[in-house]
Length: 297
Image (cartoon, rainbow, N blue to C red; front, side, top):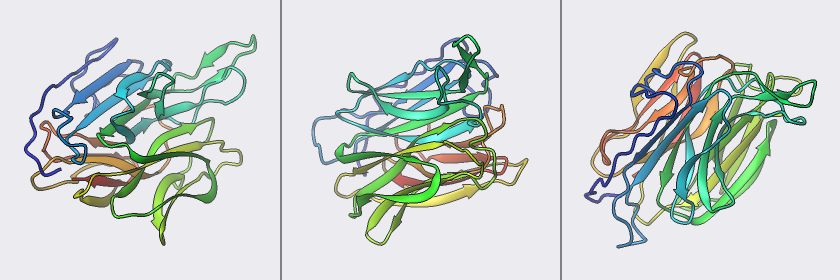
């Protein structure tokens, strides 16, 4: 990733409302927003070089329509931020869990969902709770040995992948229903132990039914990884720089913890992209939340 990139495009799209302050908390309650930043360098010269990243955001209360993030044949997309209320929703009938989710669609594209939850009404209809959820995603241009897994929040861990020097796992989706993310010690994570990667999630309600998705992928030769953590006390908001030095860098989440049960677009954990392709990334954490992240360079 230590190349001199040429940034080919910046694309900002926002439906229903326009907000240049989305990541700083400027999105008002009830707005539907889709932000896309594309910093892909011209590809094709070498499949062995990680040449760029794209960054996407979707935040809404009642709209499950996903954001198209491009083909999954040339990129791997991971969760880089979640904020809002993941504690209202349902898996039953016409219900809908609250979601911050990177998914693969049937047409071989990556999509991003960020929306609140719904339950099935008395007449069998979908009734939304109007709880806001904001999701952000980072896409890396690598697909080697990609592997996905889904795991319930039952406090157990599951083996997902063996370790090598260039293999990295990230969170890719969080799904929640009524009460699922309501305790300050609720968490979801991917982690290394011994020679393997594991996924684990635990919630402190009697019937949490929260689900976590993850993805692992092998990065190109020469990729360096940097990991770290960030947290904020209740009522606080903190932002820290999480990368440094020259070269193209990109970051995703590996661990989130806290109560995601407030109707606020800014109450959560958001990794923020730089304004240039080789600039430095930051992370913003608020109101008792904690996070761990990994950045590739």
